[in-house]
Image (cartoon, rainbow, N blue to C red):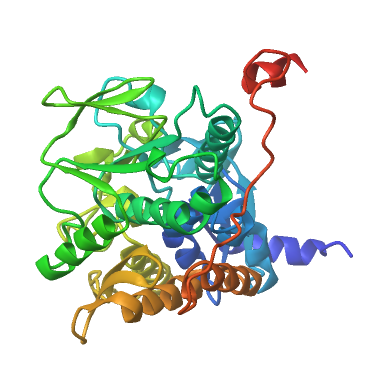
Amino acid sequence: MNSSPNAASADSRRKHVIVVGGGFAGVAAVRALRRSNVRVTLIDRHIYNMFQPLLYQVATAGLNPGDVTYFLRALRYRQKNVNYRQGLLASVDTENRSITLRDGGQLSYDYLILANGVTTNYLSTPGARTYAKAIYTRSQALRIRDLVFRHLEEAAATPETVDGLRVVIVGGGATGVEMAGALAELRNQGLFFAYPEIEHDHIQVTLVQRSSELLKPFSKRLRSYARRSLEKRGVDLRFGQGVREVHADCVELNDGTRIPADLVVWAAGVTAHSEVAEWGFEQGWGGRIVVDEKMRVKGQESEFAIGDIALNDLDLPQLAQPAIQAGRYVGRLITDDMAGKSSKPFRYRDKGTMATIGRRAAVAEIKGIPPLTGPFAWYSWAVVHIFQLLGGRNRLATFANLVTRYGQFWRVHPNPIIGELRPARIYGVEPEQGRRAS
């Protein structure tokens, strides 16, 4: 049944809120406007919400990509005042309160919320963008997973010419540590037995960290635990050296050392998307948009920035909780603003930080309780991350896969979740060339 003209007219009279970005911050803002007398348009370059903290599990064959993605249009099932549009923001006209998308579409707004997140920062390192693999999108995670297994199959088929698999991870933050731990666990529990043609020590995982410690936001005790846990799992840790250049077959450190690499995973930092510079807003460190104490874009009244893209005096960590809390805050602020009420400045309530290292090994700093390590930290990490997922199916599938891979008290040989791998060579050409020719 079509909407009546009166209903359409009433809808057009409501204030229009545009939210750019369907990540933690954007979805939180949309949900905070659920009971407000507004119409919301959510814009994202993807048609899904992506749970970025678990992408490394997709990259290491622990989760299906569908476990960590959620159809953004499904938000309408419980919130009728929201619509979705796929697109990429090209420009913002704050004077006329309108935006233009990359496809030429134009939309007017009463309030604009920028929550489009950030992307990988290669730190101007020569060769990094060309040869290193980022892990910030679903397609990137799948590319890493497929490269791992393609190389293993080549090594198993031709052990006389291909020794094994050498992975170098650049960056000792949460993403780098979690990726290194997951790869080491996969090697130790699964790949060693699944690939008898490859010597165990020929599957190597190396983590390169510029500073002398891992997981700098955590306490010294937890940083030390993370280091010991990775070393116990056979991860080669290289501290105190930055990356001078990434080559096709190795990573060159600042001291000239070259670490052979079949796969380089870049987890050394983030920066704003390049298109942000075209929007005309003041940018700070990492290209992030400068906002005031109420998350308003500096110098603007109806434009807000939240999540990783926002930069204010609070120096918020680029994590899920600050993004979710800022999204909820701005949603409430808009509701109050329409009612003529004033709002207090945004205040972040730090609930803690977590990172997993491997099977029943993690670190957690949760407000109000002592720091956690080991199984208790791992189960706490699992519960928090599962409940942050959107959708019951996602939670159930993720729970089942994580428990199967890590959760038992007995050691198991997990069955990796893999994709479609073409033969290593098709008619004498590389797989990519074969696909183009077919």
